[in-house]
Length: 322
Image 1 (cartoon, rainbow, N blue to C red):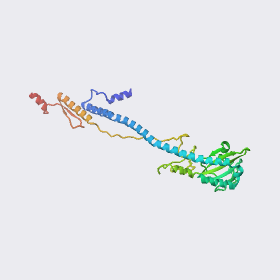
Image 2: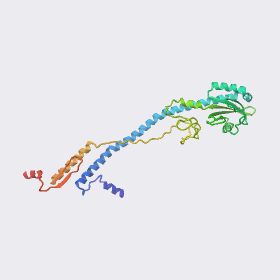
Image 3: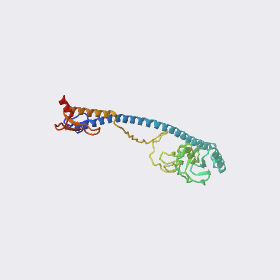
Image 4: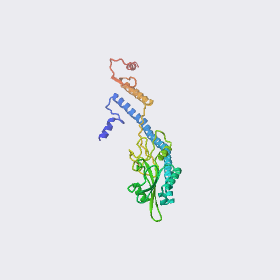
């Protein structure tokens, strides 16, 4: 009931009889302005919403499609890079016996060929079934280290193959581990372990050819940076935002920005013409009622006086003369 009473008090569709002429004129002008604003702005607003939606859809498609293609290509480059090195380590573990790999000279010769054919290898080591490193070829002194408590060693014992995330080990330097387990005909198992320099990952990302103001980096499934980021930290630092769900397909997540459009408008000539016609009709009505009305320029209010005998009234004289 209150809402209906409030609507009636606006007098948008009716003109109370008890209003004075000045109030009726003000109400008429107000209603005309409101109607013109609705007729003008409502289509513009609806058209703006439709255009905004279409523009956002097209813009997103134009930006996301090339980005998705670029990410897919880089993803395949990473997969190919790791697959080649896994194949090399698996071949060496199968082609050479445990005794051959345990020999330091043989292992160094094999590792020298690996580095020449496959860029990115840092070292190569042979680990027995008890987790002890029997032989090692590389820049560090890791012979005799035990890996029985390392998570990657437990994984390779279960799955036979392990590719680690970037992590710090005995080298105190970020790297990736590729470990392959081999079982002999006698049932004896050993693990051939190679490490890869993560600088190769940075080269793959740099090959994307991004704008200098852009940023691309790798993150593992728990939100730890695997390569350095320009804006979010270095290797092995936590990514500050929540990660999207894990997916094997390239996905793009964006933050929509609300755009507010301001529309500047003017009253049309039709409105001005109607107001003038309304003023003229009111004047003619009061002239017929023998009431004096003074109509100032558009924008002022009409002044009304009852007709007095002391005021010279040309219209009355003209009537008497006739």
